Length: 207
Image (cartoon, rainbow, N blue to C red; front, side, top):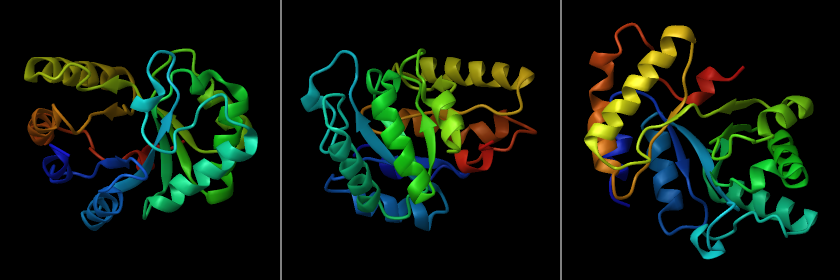
């Protein structure tokens, strides 16, 4: 996918979320691992508004029975080499569904994985539920490239810097695809702009 190579080559550790069951899944996961990045499963989960066909193969939808959800989460983990965690692709509906998320997080616990909540719904129950289940969990704070332009990514980086004035860590999510090369270009400039800040994968930020 466009921007993948550029993103993998940013000059600091990142967390690479790899979509399971895609033609490049294993290649991308292996490449990220070789470069020293965290690898996690980018698990397709049901959104509030979208066609199910947009989610990708093996998606977790809220109408699935418990056993099928469990089966799909295990299969997704098995399909992504070196995975140490999971985060949700889309998922604004699934991440407020306690039954669905309990199963997903129970599988995380069984497999020794953490969960990164992309926070596509501000009502997400993931963090609270993960804490009750003893699953390491961290939340996204900023989407860098929800608008694919240099100006927008630059403005989002300024929000990241502002967040760090009052907090000791900030999780930011960027994407490959249409705007991936723009995001990677802006990220390459971060070390110079973020003096005194350690840029690293989310596994180093877990509570």
